[in-house]
Image (cartoon, rainbow, N blue to C red):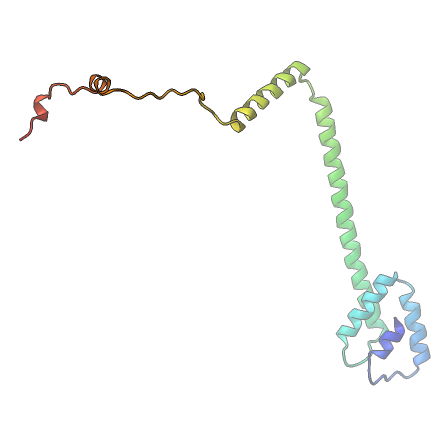
Length: 154
């Protein structure tokens, strides 16, 4: 990591490179590798022209560590609240299971019947119910009645 940092700057002007590297190693060893890597990258971005100072790298590491701590605390709090909610729900269900098996069976039958009625199409009998009527039958069925006084042609 440190070699990459040192090689990132074309004009490396460090008074005592061995002391700088030693101090940088001491600072970076206090953090996990992912935090050190982030701190070096952030400090390099903040100082594109000159090699970042050890304090800049340390500040970037501390900032990242605070962010990660805050995220971890939020995640832990969220998980605790979720577990509490699940426990409360489980307790509620244990206390409120007063339904009898008969009630549940009837409810299931009712739901199943409702489901079947909505998914099964209504069909008519396949028997032939249509028949051809003769002229006399049609005249008898639809015979013209005497016209009412309002129906007279003008």
